[in-house]
Image 1 (tube, rainbow, N blue to C red):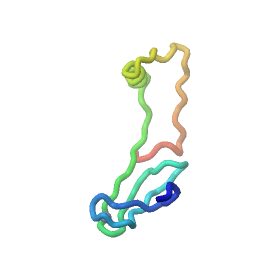
Image 2: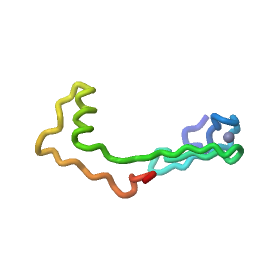
Image 3: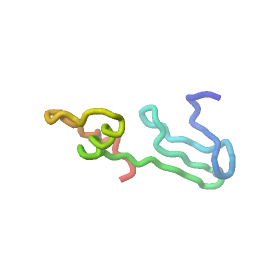
Length: 80
Ligand SMILES: [Zn+2]
């Protein structure tokens, strides 16, 4: 098994020919060329309220009032 492989096993037909799209080191989609199974990733950005909620669930303080949220780059927007 190699981490650099761009093929993985399809969870539907168990064929080894499922291809992964690799972008910037993470997989954005997979597609099986045997049965047609596919899966894609959708990305987006949480609102400040959502971030604070996520931080609270990790026992962290909310973002500081002067904290500037970095807008996500165009290349990271997937699925919409
Ligand atoms: Zn398949």
